[in-house]
Length: 117
Ligand SMILES: [Cu+2]
Image 1 (cartoon, helix red, strand yellow):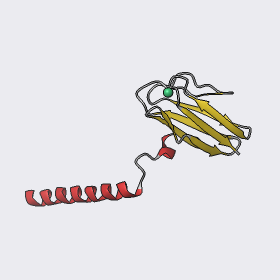
Image 2 (image 1 turned 180 degrees about the horizontal axis):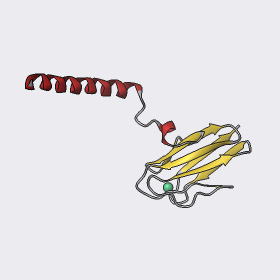
Image 3 (image 1 turned 90 degrees about the vertical axis):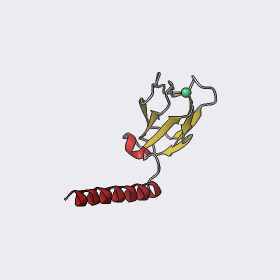
Image 4 (image 1 turned 135 degrees about the vertical axis):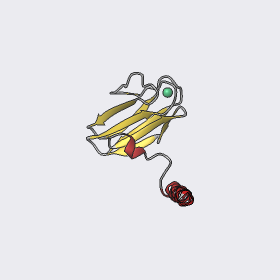
């Protein structure tokens, strides 16, 4: 009895390990689309916007997610997030086509672009 329990446990471990290996190959490390609703998601990571440029259609929404342990913000000509702490998010809907550049005013050089088609 004990022996079969052990072999079942070993089997479960093996299957689990195999599934993890397969998972690593097929899935990106961070399924960004699953993090938040929104038509595009931009991560704030290592004091950069990632991706630094996103393209959406008019009427769609960009959601920024702060993955850093420091405060960031998202400031453009017609939108401003205020402070976003670790794990925090900010969303903005872009109704008009155009090229919208934005920055984190806390970190010089932390810039991004939203292209609205
Ligand atoms: Cu910042």
